Length: 86
Image (cartoon, rainbow, N blue to C red; front, side, top):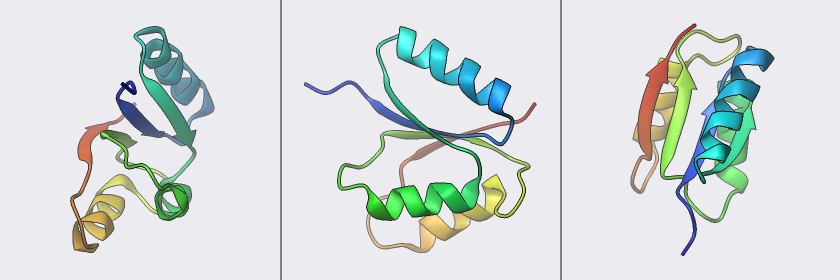
């Protein structure tokens, strides 16, 4: 069985690396991107869905709320979202 897959969307590299470290230490399969635009690209390329998207609210290019809205309009289930902000 695969560990739960999490996509961390965070523009601050220090916060992103810290979140990934904690989640991986707890056994999660974690991938990371720096903003909402990168998240949309990653989500289009992935064949296996993410169980959770841990997403910063305020980011350049595409913010967290916009990313969530775009994903809600796509066909199929929207992954669980957890918004966070530094």
